[in-house]
Image 1 (cartoon, rainbow, N blue to C red):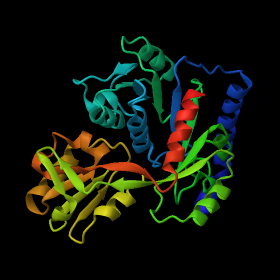
Image 2 (spheres, rainbow, N blue to C red):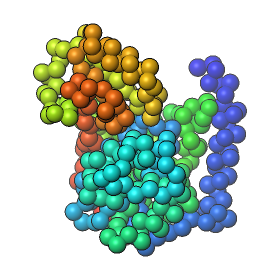
Image 3 (cartoon, helix red, strand yellow):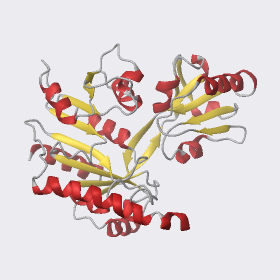
Image 4 (cartoon, one colour):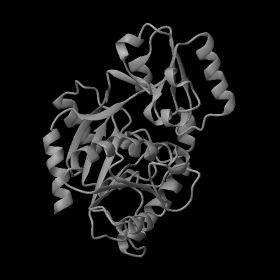
Amino acid sequence: MKWQRLLLPFGLLYGLITWLRNQFYNWGWLHSQSFDVPVIAIGNLSMGGTGKTPMTEYLIHLLQNDFKIAVLSRGYRRTSKGFVLATSQSKVHELGDEPFQIFRKFPQIHLAVDADRCHGIQQLLTLPDAPTLILLDDAYQHRAVKAKAYVLLTAYGDLFADDAVVPAGSLREFSLGKKRAQVVVVTKCPPNLTEKEQQQIIGKLGVEVPVFFSKIAFSNEVVFENGNKELSALSEFPKLLVAGIAKPQTFFDHLKQPHDLCLTFPDHHTFTEDEIKTFTNYLSNSYEYLITTEKDEVRLKGLIPAHQLGYLPVTTQFVAHETAFQQLVRRLIID
């Protein structure tokens, strides 16, 4: 687009600032702190929408039987400050929607939020049942911590190789940042992605580390507070489909029927009283259910009648070579 080209000088300036910051860490002028337990940083080069939370959940599933896992996030848009350790009494606004979602699904792990990741890790390691592995959610640019491994995500159809630095694009830094990664995962791939297409993408990314390809797998059931309902059984009912996530089109495409209404909101959106009233009016007069994402459901729960509010779970699945990915992750932790 022409207007994006006009913003390229500003993107270049922002990119130079972030590049210089990274160089300060590379040269040792800024200090990166290492820890006695392995730390895996999961993140991306872009502003969002690459599937970091499903990947974090995948790694918990993979490693929870072998390690005492802690997940540390900054807790974007939470109302609390400093270090907060999740408990059964924690509220979504104290942790942020994604950390709350993870802890609700994995209450057996330690989950904490802290904008200062070094401080957060130090606090986790003082716990009586201290973790033996820490997953840093959305921390690819957090250079103050020296992670054992960096897992870089990039979305199919929105590859970092095709993007520009903000504000001309959505990259947080130049694509040179890819060099910090030990593994790259191309997420949200079509399930029928061929080996030839995979090799073409690998060539475009230009990385010297293993590249894997994953897809988003939607559940066949929508989760309600009073029990799950088969997605096929809901197709005949008019529904409100609500998404406050980055790049929600896949969610809508999977669910939408001709009689459904799609409502899109910004990522991590805090729903206002007027918006909730609009939803409840729709549900009273025109639509049977409000179906949303798992991340949005934690912010809508208690505001929408429970029998009408459901969410569609998603998981990460690999298109191919899943065992090789699992073996590589374990090797990165142990080496």
